[in-house]
Length: 232
Image (tube, rainbow, N blue to C red; front, side, top):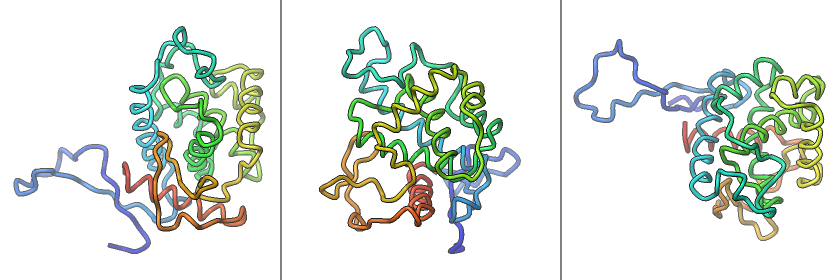
């Protein structure tokens, strides 16, 4: 395998290929670049949407999806009244297409899940929160990581919310993360335990590593590689 690339599972089998009877799993793989910045945008959106869909599925089973039964402690500004009909993949594709989102912005949304979850215990990524979170995260990441970006009015129209709501979501997010929106570490807490997006603690040999904001791309590359290994 080329050291500059990684393999991920393809979404489906190619019907034009003759099945290999000796391979019961019949898996097919696609070679991806090792650096997220070189990954095709559609491929990156596919990987991210798989990761988010897995997180949403887990958290949906743990939380109520009816806002009438959510108490004030669990109800956040990111909650919608009902689950939007558009899929995570199509919504992220829409945001990316109409707002010209760069790869770093897309990867940063996954980083922001861990970041916000650590600081905001009431927040959980589920069917009611994922779309508003993605809109807010891509809006903030575009401003934090890119030289040029769109207005909030544009992002709101693309995301399907009014401008006042997006402004409130942005302020809410920034308040909880203390405006630390440039990736600078691997989301470890004060006792060097890393909690993933479902709230479980992960142990890692590199849990003592601390990166500065000048090495943000290294952090995003770590997230990229981990996403592929988990759900590529």
